[in-house]
Image 1 (cartoon, rainbow, N blue to C red):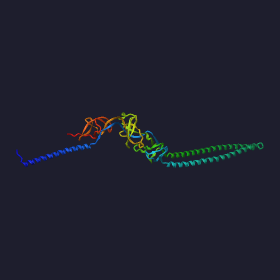
Image 2 (cartoon, rainbow, N blue to C red):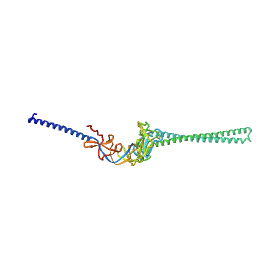
Image 3 (cartoon, rainbow, N blue to C red):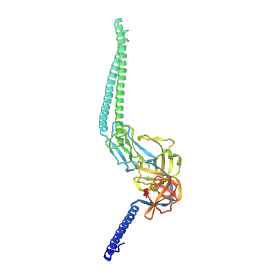
Image 4 (spheres, helix red, strand yellow):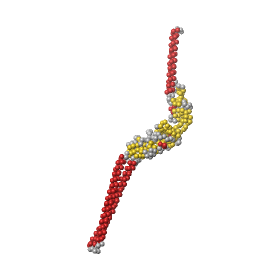
Length: 418
């Protein structure tokens, strides 16, 4: 064995010392990088705390607000109606306020025509009555003349004792002719009287018809404005003239069929949410159960309500593929002037209350070896903790075996292979 001299020993010692220092730096760097990665992973994972409090087991059903009571607005029974103005949809109205107007130009023109016809019919009646009076006076004069001729002929017949037989026969013939002429005149008078009466009656009927037409047009003009029958807000119904796919609420410019419904004024105090209830949830609910109602347009407020009705049969939807579901009606217990029919929302029907339950988000529950687990931070790692499920909702789960306030991950932690 060769003995190193002093300079060689120093070089060897310095080499191994540098080697050990470099190895220590490499090992420390790797360990530090591992710790940094674990700490960074612990920070980057989304987490949520376990909350303790009353847990509500709910059955959700989405739908829209509908009014239990409303007054319908219908179009008048007038042909060729066209809307020219409407009150803003959803605007508050008072009883007697105008909510929409129809085009009245055609009716106004018809009124002028019917009034002219009425005047013409009145003039025709006056003319018929005047002609009847003239004819009656002329007939009366002719009748008096015929009666005079008869009396004159009778006077001549009474002179037959002082006249010849031939003149007596002539006087009798003249009397018979005068009587015949009197009967003819009487018949002519009756005929003229009946004819004049018929003409006057026809003129009166024409006048009454013209007057009825004028009254009808005037009533139609009075119906060109639809007024609110009660206080509330005005809601216009869909116009299906262009088909179901293109149905939109009535607006200015739309044509309306006579007597068809146009809108309604709902009673806002009778609003309730009509929701779609899945068949699997039908047996879990019952009437008068409490409900929390959320309106999409008012996310800051939760309305108290209760389950008021459930449809006895399923209803088929217009979606594709078509589905069948029940309809649940949740009644609002409080009034809010901001609510309107047709607003979308959700009713959470409360079927069970669990006091002092520990709940976590549904995203934080996972399955490991067939058992429900959650992942909680342990130093710089995460460990799986088995829990027992008490109740489950769509977005949260009540569990046992987890302390309140424990932070749980919202993503599953995959174990690293050794």
